[in-house]
Length: 246
Image (cartoon, rainbow, N blue to C red; front, side):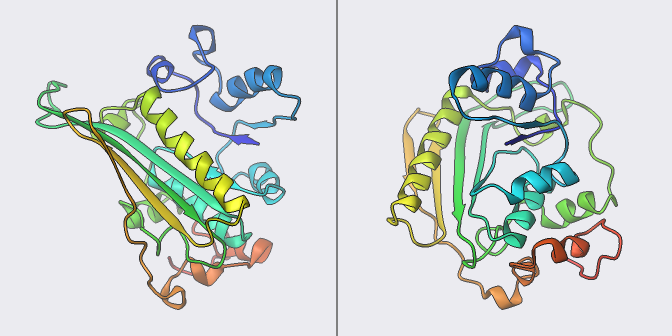
């Protein structure tokens, strides 16, 4: 099941697999589903809606694993909440290319390039996205989910945080993520694991495994929703009858 409400833009062609010029303007999930359906006998479903859409939630409940490859913390938080509610393993991937000394006013890029990716494989009942590494802007993500903040209207708003991404970097990230999932299935990975890959300005790759926070899940507002399933949906920010403040 592929869930994404975004459409393919020109810059995505340098970041994504199996898409081309003819897919520009199409929904990402739909374009990928078309190609993947030709490559595999598996049934590929596309949901061209946000992750908290009822259809997306219903389909997620039937999945064995949630893979999150989004570019904003609100969507990442939504994936983390649903994985926690329904006790699904969550593979969260974030990547980016950054340029130092950038002049935002004139859109001038200068200085050295750094890039990297974080892959977190979070296991049910072993902490959540927030207490096992956290989010860059947790409060902002909650505000966006609760519709207290209007999302950035500019399609290039993401450029204020990073300079973009690269297909080669995303291949590295997804390759390691796939290996981690395989090791989970083989019972080699038995606890939440966080891997970080950084590509230095000189082009060298460094792989580290940051210490995963061992904060008590009893003190975590997301872990408090663990396993509540459908009952927990009413506790989400922005949903009618919400009874909890994250």
